[in-house]
Length: 392
Ligand code: NZQ
Ligand code: ZN
Image 1 (cartoon, helix red, strand yellow):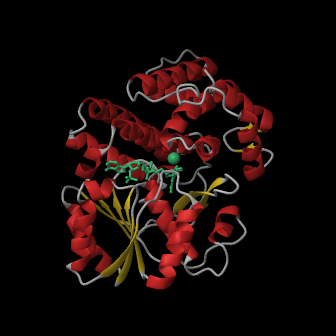
Image 2: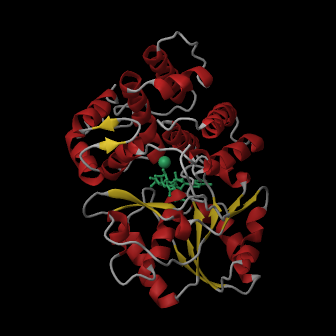
Image 3: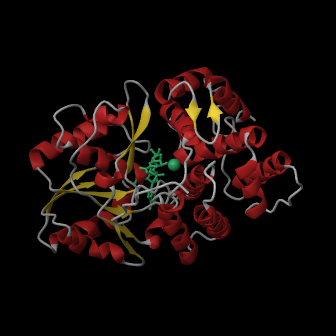
């Protein structure tokens, strides 16, 4: 196991009715002027936004609102938020929604104290040294941004979608998580969220670091539980306990609990970000297309962890041939994503019958380097092969 530092100060307030504590929590973390950020209207329709505002008012906290965050959030909304912040001068950010809303709020939080263009942070030109604190009211378990120090934004001019990872600055102070709020999610978003959190677990699981049994067993346990809960929630969207388990899984899948002391591999995410940047598809659905292709490639080129996954999670018997078992496991997972979650598992099913693979592959390596150095060493020919495996 490698050395590590783990700093995860978020207070998670979980369960029925917890959104009514939002104002109190904001006050406890020093908020007096709050910028509320939200998406395309689900929180208005559900009445959640009104409840959040009432709870702020009850604590004497003033607020402004930034509505209209789009899934796969874009830089222009961040610029709009920074303008609003200049005039309102908030001392706390409060995204109410999912990963897109939270990531936009984090970008504003980091950009607020910076003289230059906030996008500098996302291309490694500068590092934020100070950020506005934030709290979250979560409405969709998926991206895990409520417990992570990450934010992912797309640049509308260059079509670059990239992340910024600053756990010391950008982990939320608190996250309000009421599983009941997720019952209004369309099945597609529920399933895409599950696919995303499974990928977050697998990106950490695919590691060559030896002797990381705690992380491995946590990951395997989470995958077994999430697959069971996913089957329940797809049959009955009002199953509170399934919703609750899924919601908590989304957080610990991505708050680094299961990746401590090990090398991680985020390149299937990077490959998906090229798809959602170019074609604006739902992130979790893009992953359901890329991840099986990535595992299939690994089955031939570095099968040991995929074979372990197949044996311990996917019900494949140990044949003594890791490549064979890894491929079997990959097919079990691909079929499960398709049959149970009703996720697309090919580009055509994702609605992109003729994707521009060369364009995405060139952008990928321009952003991440000539060789993607993770669980495998992937040059441009290798990643192109993975993209091609996702065609059918
Ligand atoms: O915009 P509204 O109207 O709120 O509708 C949203 C949106 O259309 C809807 N929704 C959310 N909660 C709902 C609801 N509809 C009904 N009832 C509810 N309770 O769901 C849609 C998707 O929302 P979004 O915020 O985009 O979802 P998600 O949490 O999956 O976030 C995806 C974004 O996060 C990034 C992804 O790349 C993508 O841009 N990621 C962020 C990460 C991070 N910060 O750590 C890591 C991830 O790997 C990921 O890359
Ligand atoms: Zn993700």
